[in-house]
Image (cartoon, rainbow, N blue to C red; front, side, top):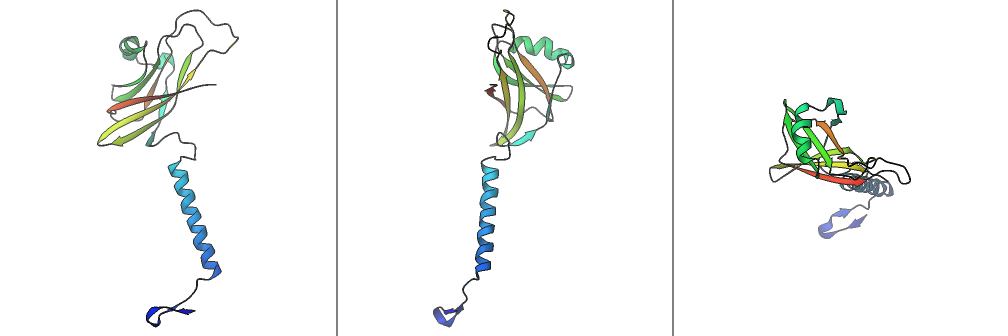
Length: 163
């Protein structure tokens, strides 16, 4: 023990107390890193949105007839509300051959300044090298039902290419 100002006695911390404090500090730092740098496999920030990609035959006719033809030549993500369900469409634009594809990896909803932004993480698949493909223009797209009640204010496409 040592004596501080005013005759107050200060006890040195025990070795055990120092170790416990260090362990707690390390756990806090680890928790911060896991959440801040997304070390658990999540792609981005925001609330993860569950979704289900639809088979071609399950895509609503209104989307097939009205949305796809208008946006198929663009590379983008967009949403539409149909029968109280939110559908997300990702289009790749015109491609010169068969073998191109697109699928949705993840969706995350962010709130900033009172506005909602849906980030759609999509994977673009290219034709395999040295494999014969049909020489015909294609317009790859995918449609998913997102577990949302309302359309977000904006939708952002974040794409990566499958190797």
